[in-house]
Length: 82
Image (cartoon, rainbow, N blue to C red; front, side, top):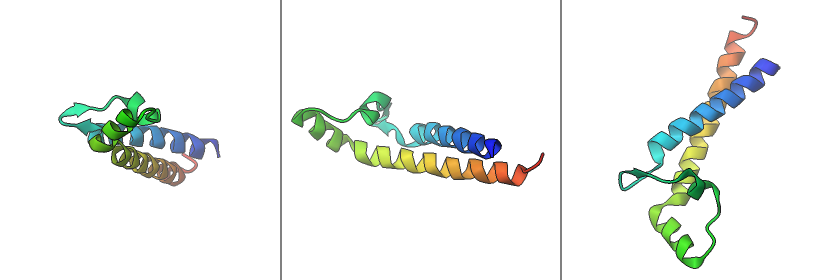
């Protein structure tokens, strides 16, 4: 069971990193990860985040993390007793 959890965590982190590298760009520059994690405070900040597509970026990175987690579990399950 510990190997499956390890596979889940490693796969999720790898998926999040790959997702950020693929989807974390706006105008050729990477979005600050803190801006993606922290909620927008003021009306201007929310408007900027909406214009830059932060919700879409968050969703795509989250999906990548989920796919990585599932892949990690599958790999650890296939490896089994090795």
